[in-house]
Length: 181
Image (cartoon, rainbow, N blue to C red; front, top):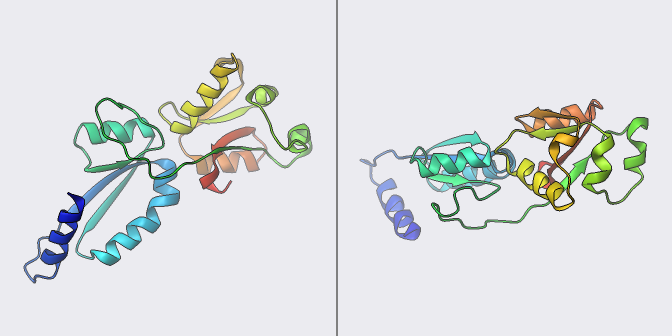
């Protein structure tokens, strides 16, 4: 189906009377900030008449936007509404722990691997509810009998802000490896 649409758009694009088309994409923050800019650039080189609107959301809101027909396409870090939407896994990601490089955090910096339990002595810097990163962290905590409420934590709606807060020594965080923390 997409191949047929691609061929049709290519033929229309060669016409001087070509209709301008817009594609609206809802994307969770990691794909939106770190993966899609390259993809969108390649796409518009191939289809220069297309207009792209890339809307950053958390995973739950991106999926809701697709389900509610507010966007034609979505890219999310986690399946939300799995019984109502079709999903295609584009790639796998892993979470990493971001730790400030300072004396206070030295006990964490000397270890090659950390558990979520070892983070409990430090302020945890988190994404907002609905974020795939946060959801995956909460599930990892639950597997070990831990709950987020037992941690001192601060919530942000941007991993870039979280990375800056880690650099300033505010606390530790769990981020996608793709954010190049």
